[in-house]
Length: 194
Image (tube, rainbow, N blue to C red; front, side, top):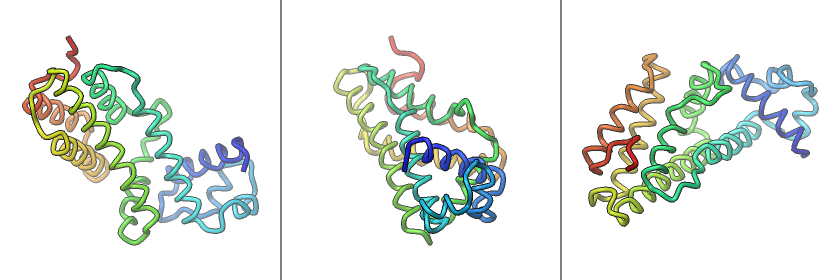
């Protein structure tokens, strides 16, 4: 599949998810969000589940691009991670967190969804744990178990997503809790590098 076709399919899937949610999503509704026919979508993906699996791969790639930080300083990497997770993307649609939540709700029943969500979780934990480990080695952070800190931070982020969707809570409240936790655990105030 060409890059242009792939991009169009992923963008149409995003728009259709935002508009209809996962429960009411159909190949026809996705095709309606693009210049392609339903037959063209079925040419590339036999089922909606296959398409959503590819969409989750696409999301994982985009998320990893947002997490990419070339900074050598682990404090800057950790701060960039928090920005990537808690700052909405420039093109973010307010209905997308709901659609993603619906996909997460299907993970117990869809192995491919669960696998992609596990990959995303592991990637986020690795970013945090590596930054914490590097910060300890550079004497920027207090000595802690990097894996435990990473698990807590990612659990809080997942909880923030649930609270945002279910309770209409602003994720910045959770960001503040995460920053307070990091300050207590690491002896470092997020946003302060020097």
